[in-house]
Length: 378
Image: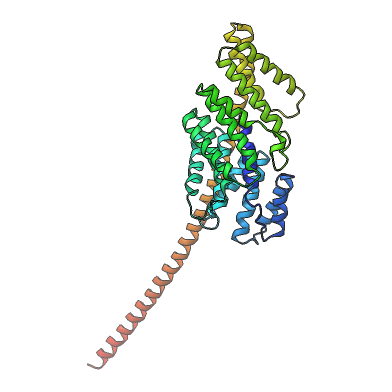
């Protein structure tokens, strides 16, 4: 279900400056290109950021674009780098909405890296800021997205009760939102709520939510993004196959799973769906006591799990190296500052000592002259 998180954060980020054009022409251009051409948007925002001519608001705007486009380009190291840079200079006043959104994107990125504790730290901060008086009631989409991401975090943490509560909060916010993007996000929230209910073996409720998650082009006020409807349908069918498996109907479940694989065999875009299918096929064949096929599909599943864990570990090691380098730079800067301060105070102290020595010498000279005069006049 990894793609479910990534997708909503794309929408999450794009909604940030909708209707709020920046002062800088380059940033406005980059903002418009974020979804259409994130690579070009990144270059434009990077050029603006490096110019060192932006005011505070424009700097925050440029860092948001860099954070969001890095997320779209699936470069978690840059997401963390620019996101944390933005948080360093953002305040809880006019920047609070930006801050919430960046915290959400960072939380999603740490989830991708399988660093669940880090994920929760950032999302907890974002949720805490939702109570800020600077957040108007009209920003239901912002609130809904944070609640959704928290729900996914607990879902991955296998705590379906808390996940359900957050999915319900997210759905409530999306229902009250007038932003067209909420029409898409609510479908994803219903889908994952359905999966939580499947884990709790509440199959009737799960089917109701999977039905609510289905996409009809006629019910949207704007066209759905490419591939969204197809992916949503696949996840819904996969959810139904899970229910059939849990209800001890592995044969019908397998029929649905093989049908999905057949429909997707020529798809240029691959994701975690196949791996979820392999896992369920292994479970179903175990129920059917077909050990050979169980072992085959389990091996496919475990191979992908190992690959995913390896990729996450590689990213985490890169992140550790990046943070170590950044810490070294900060330490070097601090040492340089300390050296300058020590030099500065040493010069001042030296000047004071020289001055005091000069005064002492002059005083001693005057004392000797006075003593000499007194001696001569005795």
